[in-house]
Length: 113
Ligand code: 5GP
Image (cartoon, rainbow, N blue to C red; front, side, top):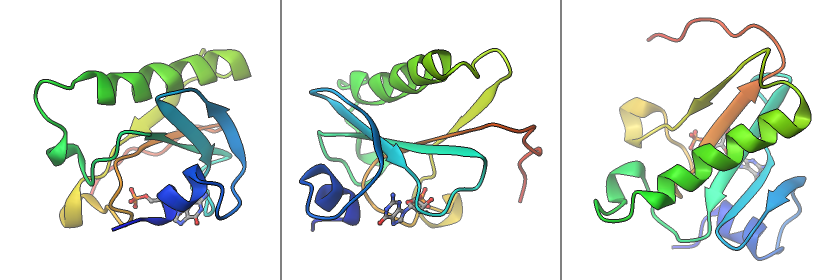
C-alpha cells in the first residue's frame, strides 16, 4: 500500500527535498524533533528494517552514508548528529516505509523509554 513517502517520491505531495539520487531521497521531517531533522528514504521500498533481505545490506548502508555526507556538507558533522531507525510498534515507527532519521543542530538528550 502506498505511503505518504511514496507520494513525496512521486511528487504527488510537497516536501522540502534536500538530497536525491537514483537510490535515496531525503527531505525535512514535517514535525522536526531537533533543529535539523531529515528523513532518508530508499527508493527500493521495504516497510520496515525487518523486511530488508539479508543479501541487500546496501539498502540500509546507502541511507547512513547519504546522511553522513549531508552532515559533512552542511557543516555539522564535527559538532555531531544522531541517526535513528524506528522498527514496528515498540520502536515507535509510524510510517511503514523504511527510513532513517538524521537529527542534529543541538545537543541531543540521551534516548530511553
Ligand atoms: P517514524 O515514526 O515512522 O519513524 O517516522 C515517521 C516520520 O515521518 C515522523 O517523524 C513524521 O513527523 C514524519 N512525517 C509524517 N508525515 C509526513 C509528511 O507528510 N511529510 C514529511 N516531510 N514528514 C512526515
